[in-house]
Amino acid sequence: MRLTTIGPLILAIVLGAACDKNSPTSPTTTSTSPFTDTFTGELVPGSGASRAFTTTSGGVVVVELIGTSLSPDAFLGLAVGIPTSGMVGCSPTVITRATIDTQLTAAVDAGTYCVRVFDVDGLPGPVAFTVGLTYP
Image (cartoon, rainbow, N blue to C red; front, side, top):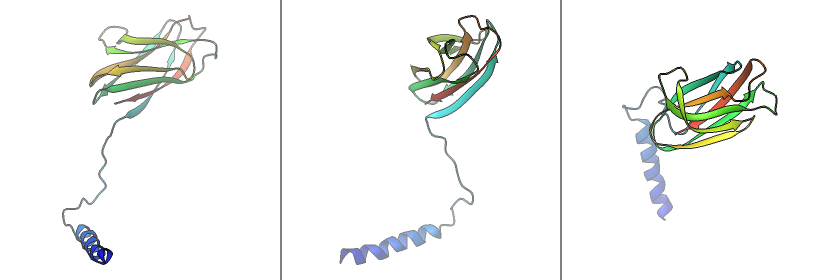
C-alpha cells in the first residue's frame, strides 16, 4: 500500500523538475580535486626544467616520471618545491633520483608549488621526458 502512495509522489517530483523554467540550457561543468596534468620537455646535459602548479586544498602531490628517452639504467632528478624567480625556477623541498615509473609524493597545503626535472648523472645528450602530476 505504501508503494502506491510513493509512486505518484515520485512522478510528480520528476515532472515538476522537468518543467522548471530556471533549468540551465547548456551543461555546466565543475572542477574537482584531484587534478591531473602532464609536463613534457627535453633536457640537455647539465640542465633542468620546472613547472608551477596551484593546489586548491591540502593533500598529497604525486609526481611520476612516466616517459623518457633515457636508458633504463640512468637517472634524472625529480623534485617538488616552491617556485622561485631565479634561474632554476623551483627550490626543491622533496627530491629523489628517478627512473621510468618512479613516483615522488609530497604533503602540501593549498598554495603554489612546482615540479622540477633535472640532470643528476651527466646526460650523454638531449633526453625527452614526460612527468605525470596529480594534486589536490
